[in-house]
Image (tube, rainbow, N blue to C red; front, side):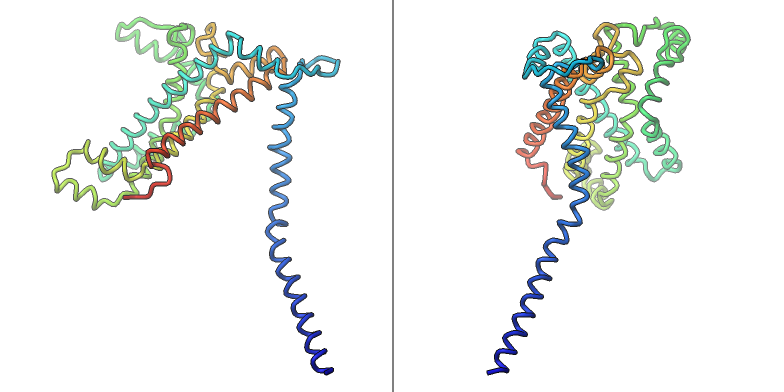
Amino acid sequence: MRLRRRRATELAAVGSGQSRVYRGERLAPALMLAPSVVILLALVIGPFVFLIDTALHRQNLFQTTPPRYVGADNFYYLFISTKFQVALVRMLVFAVTALAAEFVLGFVLAAWVHRLRDLPGMAIVRTLLTTPILVAPIVAAVMWRFMYQPDFGVINYILGLVGIPKPGWLSDPDIALFAIIAIDVWQWTPFVFLIVLAGMYAIPRSLYEAAKLDGTSPWRQITHLTIPWFKRVLVIVLLLRLIDLLRAFEVIVATTQGGPGDASYTLPVLVWETAFVNFQMGDAAAASLVLLVIVTIVITLLIRAISRQGVVGQGRR
C-alpha cells in the first residue's frame, strides 16, 4: 500500500513537471515576440490613432487654444475642394504614366542584356544601367532641375545645337508633369530592369536553346517562355513601383513644388502644403488618411484582379 502511494506521488510530480515545461514552451514564443509587438504598437498603431484623432479636429499648428472637434468636416471640405480633385487626377496620371514607361523600358533593357549576356563588356553595361538607382531622389531631382534650366541647362543646349526650340521644361504647364515623370523613369527603370533580369537569369538556358532549335522567334520566346516563367516576379515589381509612385513627393517638391500653377500638383504635395505651408494640421491629417485609403484600395483591387487570372500564387509550369 505504501509503495502504491509512493508511486502515485512520483507520477503526479512527474506530470506536474511536464505540464510546467509544456506551458513554458507555449509562453516562450509569446515572450520573444513581446518586444516586437510593443515596438509595433508604439511606432505604428500609436501614430495612426493620433492621425485619426487629428483628422477629426480643426487644428492650426500655432494656435494656442485647444483643437476643436469637427467630426468629418475636414473630410467633407477636402472632397469638395477643387485642389483635392486636381491633385487626385495629377497623382493618377503621374503614377500610371511613369509605371507604364518604367515597366516597358525595364523589361526591354533586361531582355536585351539577357540576350547579349555572353558578349564581352556586358558586366560594365549592367553596372552603368543600374547606376541611377543609387542616387538619392532629392539629389536626382536637383540634378535634373539644373539640366532642365531654359538658359544654361545641358538639355536645351543640345537642342539648340540641332536647331530645336528650347522649351521651359519645368515652367510650361503642358510639359512640367511629364518632365518630372522623365526624372522618375530615369531613376527607377533600373529597379525594374534589375529584378526582371534576375528573373530571366533564373530560367534554365536549355529552355531557350530548345526554343531556338524549334525555330521560335525572339518575340515568341519572350511572350511564351520568359513572361509565363516569372509572372509573380513581374507582379511584385508592379505592386512595389505603384505604391511608390502613388506617394511620390521628393522629386516633385524639389523641382516644381506642384507648379507651375497646378500642373504637377499631386496628393502628397497637397498634404505637405496643407501641413507645412498653411499649418492646417487637421486638414492635412484628413488628406493623409484619404491618400492611405486610395493606395490601399488601388493595391487591393489590383491584387484581386491578378489573382482571378491565376497569377498570384501560381507556380512554374
